[in-house]
Length: 139
Image (cartoon, rainbow, N blue to C red; front, side):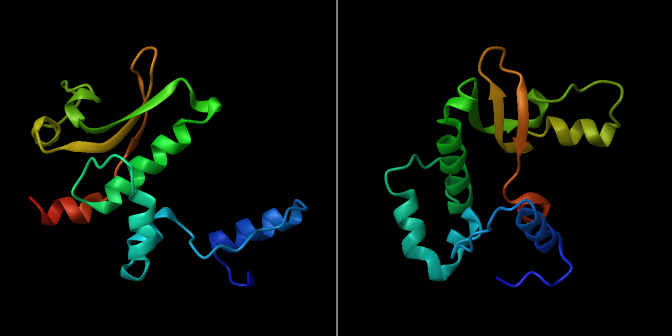
């Protein structure tokens, strides 16, 4: 494992090594590596038997991964929901410009996932998978 370059990842690897831990090199660096054409078989295996919430494998992979993590005891008070409209998460009031209000109230403007506290339904984390470029080209 080479970590002589000046990047955030390599700085992190140096920090791990400094703390007397040993970084382990993996063939898959991210769950999204499963999206590459060469990993189609691994992607199909990972998604087999998992709930499909989207036509996009990227969102299905992320949803399955988040659900798996939330099964751990440490996260028993959290859950995840897909496709939550932005207007249900933020307060639409006079602090927003007219353009921002129109954007927030558009039924197509949503978060791919919201991780929330089960007890009071308060959002903890909003997750966007495809980002601005995807949504900008799919208006």
